[in-house]
Amino acid sequence: MILPKSNRLTTEQLAEVTAIVTEFGCKIQPIVGAVRTIYAIVGDEREELMINRLEGLAYIDRIDRIQSPFKLMDKRSDLASHRITLGGVTLGEQLLVIAGACTIDPKNPNYFYETAAAVKEAGAHVLRGGVWKPRTNPYAFQGDVKSLDILLEASRRTGLPVDTEVMEEAHIPLALDAGVHTLQVGARNALNYSLLRAIGRAVAERDACVLLKRSIHMGTINEFISAAEYIAAFGNPNIILCPRGTSPALDGYRNHPDESITPLLKEKTWAPVVVDPSHSVGKASYVAAAALAAVAYGADGLCIEAHVSPSHGIGDDPKQALTPDMLAKTIAQAKQIWALRRSE
Ligand code: PEP
Ligand code: MN
Image (cartoon, rainbow, N blue to C red; front, top):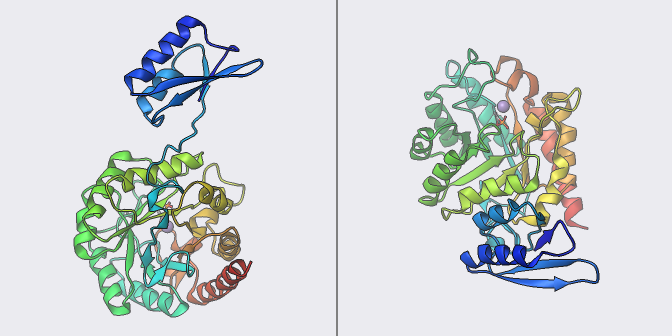
């Protein structure tokens, strides 16, 4: 829908607008009101180039979209009935829990093996462990490809599928060929469209899954769902949205907690939402409350950092990892809230 700045377009302006939409196979239908006339675009108004050209005209106030910009991730798309099953859990039918260390320590693999067994015992369905790490400080530990073997060994020992972050294209085949089931796109890369395309292309060939974190710079809901659309466009709809707090941080927290985004996402997309309370609040003692709030807001699952001995962990673990006891309690309480919501 085209809304002009003035009450109606002049004959010359209407001719110019009509010429543009005609190039894209659309037509213009004026809707004449008592005071203002607005102009419907009849045809597929999702054509970005057409919208950009119309928005660039000085006499156009704005273009209001009636159709969703997401062809695949939209709640009304044919994919809306698609169900993702991960770690034996069909999302939407049971609360999914992904848990494990922020970062695998390649020098002390036993911590990760013990953590893997402990998170399974606590009730997690998927094991997370960082192999390659995005670190703010270039001199901080950046991860190590050797940790991939540790991750997969922990998967064999526990029978849990694993999730790890891929930071660049070269990591994708390494992770998938090793047997990683869920590729995580981190908050720093969620706006890296070439990486999203490469992931979409790679997972389309397999039954893999993508956990897409929300970038700290994604102000709008549409930006988040559009990033998922980049991946889905290649044919694999196993995409889970993962809010993890945004920037600037709420004073005292690591980020600005965004658990409340879930109902807004669910108004627009069918994609399941698995909230990461660990990076959102950034401190172990606050994680449980954020996790429970996330489930109260309608999250389909949680992604929580946990470690058998957080003070011996690396990366974020010393600050924000839950101990196995804390994790077990959080999962039990989260399941109660989940059940309460389901009984509404
Ligand atoms: C992580 O999961 O350890 C991580 C680095 O997360 P994020 O990309 O959300 O910061
Ligand atoms: Mn982390």
